[in-house]
Amino acid sequence: MVKLPNSKIVWTFFLLIFSSCVQLLNINEQKSFFLSTEGVKIKLNAESARGSHYILKVKSEKGNIEVNPDKLQLLYIYLENNKTIESTLYYHNKLIVNNFTLKEGESFDCKFSLISQDKTGKIYLVPSDFITYNGIPLAKDTIKISSFWSNI
Image (cartoon, rainbow, N blue to C red; front, top):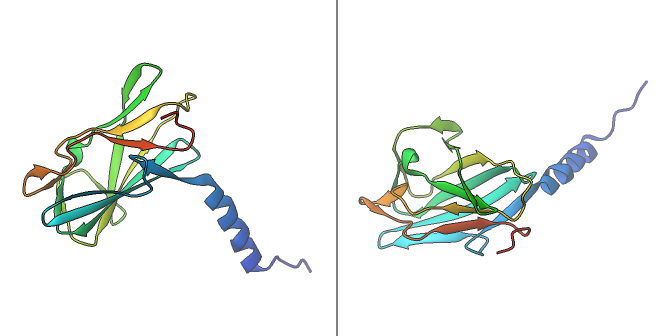
């Protein structure tokens, strides 16, 4: 009779492999970046899996915000070239294509893939009406998303 490995060992091995593939990214040179105005505060985090799949996590820490997926503008700049990044938004694990209200304490993920041999490129979230509060955009300046390999 073949003896199977202890499930705790298998699970621990799986977690070690998975965690080594996910890298937390900096947003404006910080692990977490906050956008706020009177009555609202949102938190941004980003991570990369294998250097080509990215997740930008947006959480409303205070107040309700409006999200317009069509207004999201991510830009990848490398070797003097610019490339617009195609992205998808997920809210409660469902694909989002229409505007929606993100309530206080809730979050959503913006997922995108980027395959490039140039590891010196930079990803930017361009100011837009992507996230607003009372019709006013929260991101008024360009937000830089980077990892340890970026020469920023």
